Image (cartoon, rainbow, N blue to C red):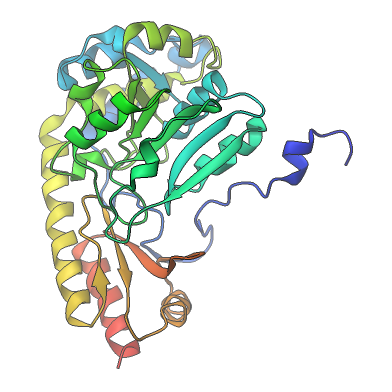
Length: 349
């Protein structure tokens, strides 16, 4: 149709992971938390129902910002809330990258980054990771067109991480802002929050979807210096987080005892999954997330994905040009992972 901008007509659009609406599946394909969220979340949402739905929500989500500031050790005005971290990524891209300008990202990584660049009519520069999932030298080279760099850390699909000291060095060399996407960081050994105060160009985005088991609630946030937050706020929707999401996310981040217990449980299962798949001959990246990326030196993995799906177990098959294919398996419950492993054992000689 000729009514739409050329950038929109020419783009393929982002395709989310499979979300079956009928039948019972073991879902290990979209990195959801396998356990229910803190019971405090349900209670907080119940308190909003009724009168709380009649009025507009707080456009800043200050209840969350104040509590998150205590947990994270940053001032509240360093935090901006979003309708999931995808909303945050959209806000940042809209604010910083215009038509004909450039957005840089590593590859393989989160494919939504490319979509956000294409919506803007911007040039998406994809820089391949080194084979050991480190960043090549060219990733730090600035250019006149470059306006924003995305760095998922931990990365998806690999689950690997770039150390904070290297990220600070990267930001110091770049001539544009650097957004560190920490969607999975609560399952990692380190994070980049402390870097935000050391370099104005560094921003850190996070989500409540993974380690707080709130993927269905849609709540994320960004941490940046206040002068950056005030500019990003001009781009966000007026009320981009609803009252239920603000209440639920605030209760979730307040329950750090639940979060710590959940994190430890997921990491233990991640170790079990990695060990068992290695014994079956798979190569695994050293994951710092709630999923593991598996390849096999001799066996084709796409038929394994198809057979698992036929047996109602969903994992993520991904194939990257010039890189190869593999299976990204989300960490489920011990029972879900064992069911998946038992099927794979029958499929690998």
